[in-house]
Image 1: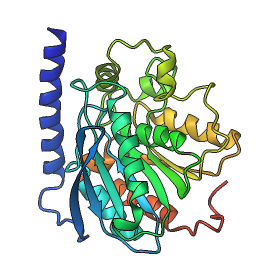
Image 2 (image 1 turned 90 degrees about the horizontal axis):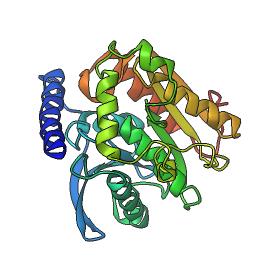
Image 3 (image 1 turned 120 degrees about the horizontal axis):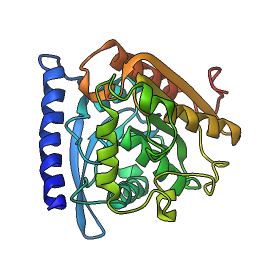
Length: 300
């Protein structure tokens, strides 16, 4: 009964999420970027990809959308992907991974890791790129991007990780922002908790298997690549991204941390062409455009 109820709630949430996205972007022209839709078979299942064509002198961005592992799609994050590709000049491939509660952990992470490996193996046959790649995502997608980066740290061509308000810790962690901004933004804390439970199912927070999704002390960050982390103020997991940036800095990694003081969680898809959306696109594009052989003056 609980499983059926969760599926009904998820179905309603996806519909609401898409409607809110469409309303926010109503009447606003799409960024003009050449786009191709692909479908690849990975381990016997079909995974849809959307490819945005950029320039041959830039790395390929492999993007996983947000939505608490429950909602979100290629369509809800199409505007952000278009804008990021257009402003940065990078080609970008967005991954349409399986969603919970129909498919629980580690389905989304498996899909994204296998799709990323497929993209990396086929870089020369895809949209223009320089043979390097960057893993990126927002919210749950930022979580997946970080997990995929950890799995592929030593992969040839790794050029960085871009995580926008990522979730890197279980909600039982003592994040002050979970209380401070429980209801102040677009996504209430209770919704985040429900989505996390829907994806993890009956797995206890202390289960060792969750080290993959919530990297803790057992996970070394010493070889993590250059990273940009962007957080939003009106966000229950505001402090999550900030803490992860500190962890990367202490591990000796090259990390840039930017905080949007007026933004809400979900800004990349649910606010329309807002100032915060433009700021996030600009920050990410500038970071992506930094020559990889040079050190950015803004990075510590």
